[in-house]
Length: 295
Image (cartoon, rainbow, N blue to C red; front, side, top):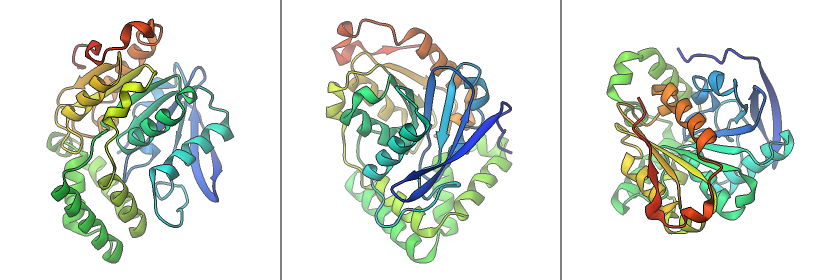
């Protein structure tokens, strides 16, 4: 089962353009704002929140259509996810946090940081992508999303999603966790599954724009990630001036669940050692530092 945070959590409902979002906070200290991926919820971070909350005020929330948040009407866009992130920050006074974005959450965070870099102290981008799908792959995903909108998520589609979310080793070691996640996906509205899938499949590349982003950044990839392979994380790190790249071995896409200790260690190490440098020395993307692989 998904490990629950042991420290006291407080929850709230935040309005984002007419949609109520579920928000949870835990711990005290400098703020960390955590955003989840497609077909997930803030429960994705249950295994990292307890340790992070020893050092930080950790704020997590469910994007619309996910978890315990309401469902937005109309098309889901990165503009919508950005608005929701801004709404949570304003309502809970989460000022100048270190932004931690997993997968889709990282994709939204990069776009928000490009628009308003002063909003964040730094970025942590885990298993995210700044590129786009190849045409044939994109068309196939769009077709699958259209079928899901019409008929609901079918067994084969859920199998594909599961194989991209978790490594085979993790599914074998923790079948209950995989079943919990699959049950949560089956419990989502079919339109929310479809619209979010269309969004991520149809994303436009933003890799060249990252060179102008003046924020410290930690980029996390994982060895067995087939949804956003580690090469995509490495590309983000190379595009961001002076960023830090950590490659987690023997883990699939869902690093906060598969390798929570490595994720926590990477974030704490980054905050302790990666935020006080002279950014003028980090203009060249080739200066990207690679710390040793997490274990």
